[in-house]
Each structure stands twice: as C-alpha cells, then as structure tokens.
Length: 118
Image 1 (tube, rainbow, N blue to C red):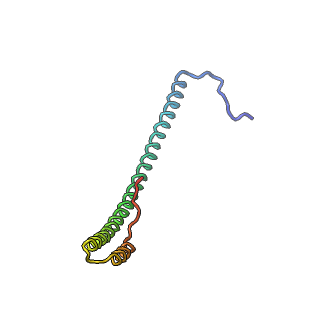
Image 2 (cartoon, rainbow, N blue to C red; image 1 turned 135 degrees about the vertical axis):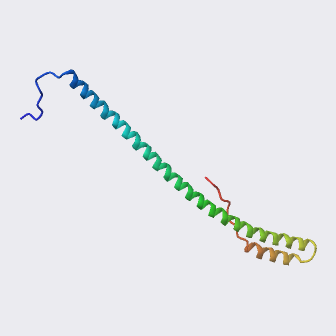
Image 3 (tube, one colour; image 1 turned 135 degrees about the horizontal axis):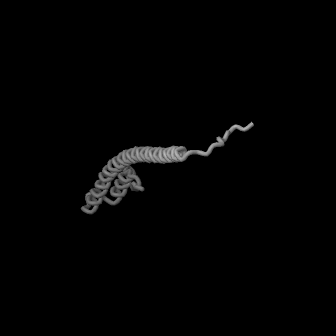
C-alpha cells in the first residue's frame, strides 16, 4: 500500500513558484525566529551578569567598610604604642613597663590581611 501518491500530470510553473515562495518564507522566518531567540538569550545572560556584578559590589563594599573599621581601630592601638615609645624615650616609663604595655596593646590589636580584588 503506497502512502504517498504522486500526481501523474506535470506541474505548472505557477506551482513551482508557489513552492519556492513557501520554502523561502519558511527558511526566512526560521532565521528571524532564531535571531530573536538568540538576542533574548543574550539579554537574559547580560541581566544575570549585571545582577551578579551588583551583588559582588555590595559584598565588596561591606568587606571594605569592615576593613576600614578594623584598620581604624588598629591605628588607634599603634598610636598608643607610639606614645609608649615616646614616654620611654623621655624616661617617663622604664623598659619593663614599655615591653609589658606594648605587649598588652599589641595583643588587643586586631587587623586582617589586605583585601585583594579579582
């Protein structure tokens, strides 16, 4: 049993033109649809990358503010050590007092490593 029946009469030139136009329209519309879909995918990736970048910048901002606070507190401790050294050099405290005071001050001084950006 044959499913596809071929007509036995020859096609007219109008039928060839109609088939060509339909085929050309199908290929052209397929091209345009694929192009639109690609642009949508690119826009979606661009938006996701922008959201990720904004989140990274927010995290970096929090980390920088944390480092600024940390280093500001450490700077106060280093100023105390400088004042102790000045007091020792002017014979206001002895060497043991200097060492003990600097040790206590340094133990209370906390500062982290530098923050590196990629």
